Length: 132
Length: 132
Length: 132
Image (cartoon, rainbow over all chains, first blue to last red; front, side, top):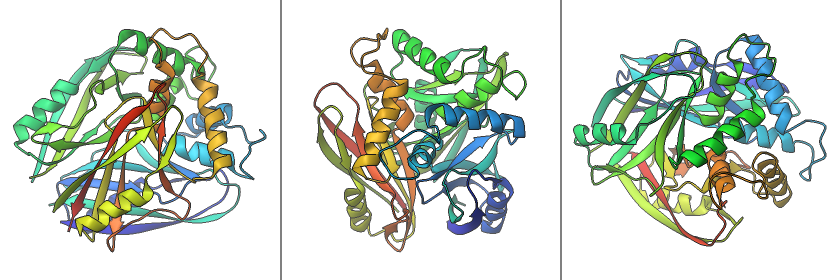
């Protein structure tokens, strides 16, 4: 069985959105009890982080991103090269196991969408659940 | 067809465990000949590295991790922020093709679980194989 | 339904090959309309980047790779430690949703194979499509 749904997000530069519950809702709607849930962001200037949604930790991550892709560095690519690099480090996809109709996630493991682009964006996340 | 099994690990700070053979054993038990094998770690302070299990290379990786998330830096998040950051760079998931009942892996491509946390942990890896 | 095909690449150090159309051709040949497409590189010294195939951006990525894994640093692992580290940051695998017989990719999201090794290589990419 295959079930697909889309999650729509309105973002602004640097905005983080915890989509764990949205993804869990899609799993519930799918009625699939055992399988895999693919979370895919079709874009290049934002990313997915599976980690603890703690504001202090997220500030540490922000400094981590800034350390290797600073916003005020001169890049060849116009405007938002650092957004592309951060998106590529965070990655655009993760596949999570589903058991008993729920995502198997660690206690502190949240699915966080992080907007790295330099302007407000309308984003779509593609959720595909396969199983039975 | 869908087959799931768990791999249990006892870790300590910095410990690396090559789980390639454990995952291959699950593939064998599944009796699935052609498909995909999802390896998922439900946690945030350790990660999976698919690379050559050579002690000298792993020391180079350790220096690489230390360069962007040093253990002795002051972080906002208490205690183990660098564990979270390293886990997020290593990633918690990979999906590997299965052919003729075996993982398709490169000659030097091992599945290495790397404990980044600051204390001993009991870890579970979730293996989900789909196919026929 | 499950469909598998291989993409063969001849590379040289630093070479980037955009395989988006090759992967799309495999999806078309599979005749699978809805599902998931797993792109897997069985190796440790090259990687997959899903990003904009713009030469100026790729030069920015090259500088990004050089910043944390410089070619002229002394490593413990002989010869190509930086190739392994870059491959591990880029990752060897991504699973992309398929809809209406086509990959769901962002407008600027290309699948780029990046050779990080220090010599010419013959590479194989494993494409596995599941769905209906």
